[in-house]
Figure 1 (cartoon, rainbow, N blue to C red):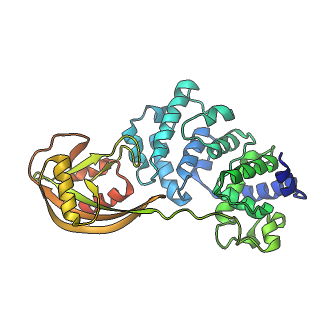
Figure 2: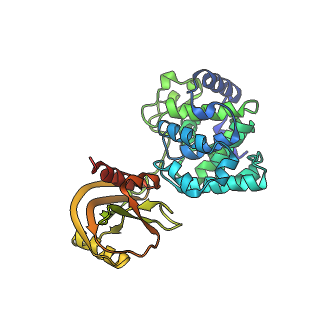
Figure 3: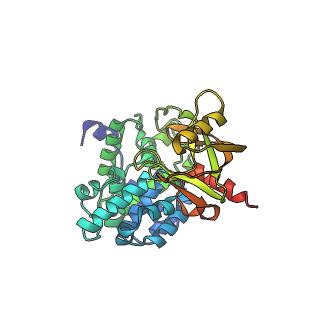
Length: 363
């Protein structure tokens, strides 16, 4: 243990903290579907889904996903398109691809049993230190730290850590502290208790300090600095990207959709034809793009909507049109799809909204 961590934990009652946290968690924990048992596969799926996503959003997705792919073998043998469709709406689709890739490795290399060794589980695709620690501690009762943003916020306040949690060096400090203070008798409840505390009590703004089960251990509360912690440098604002999109219908009533490349943002998902805009007429740029891409002439009939969709690093500023064309297109990474069948394809969230506009156009 480093000298810095020794100093931070000076006079900190680790055993009493463990007792207070675990007792509270066992009494107050929320009823969540992935807590029904400690099946490591269920824990794994839930932890991947919960990355960057709220618990109440994840619950129906998790339940549907587990009904479709209840075991390691079921997910390993599934078609990627079916997995992406089940994931549709959760975003960050690389999570789903990495999960299936890693599950296939578990099926092939570990007889379908999620490994319980830190090195083996950390080598699986998409399994970082937090996810590895969560699976090992929750499913296998192995005292490994599971440190994410929630846990860093809680520890910043409890221990009084004035380091920028956005820096990798700070994460190492938090992992070292957690490794020291985690309960060796019940690491599952300890790590889940830390997560639960961050989710419902020690929240980013206006923490409920007077309801906190570990208030007596909290240095930030004692010093009145809980609103100042954690220290976190601001991210850059997402870059705006103006885009024109067209729901393009042929004379038989089918819509043109294209599949995105197999790598990069939103890989392999389906979308309506679109173009990133520069200065000038949006409609002209859209028509020129379609002429070059598909060798057809289109008529832009009307504007349907404008809206924004924000990623961590990009802000799509979408203008959506309804259009039509008459002619033949040679298939290449796209399909002509009946309106009623659009819902069978996995679209990113922004294009799900456009699909809904098209479907509501029937009414």
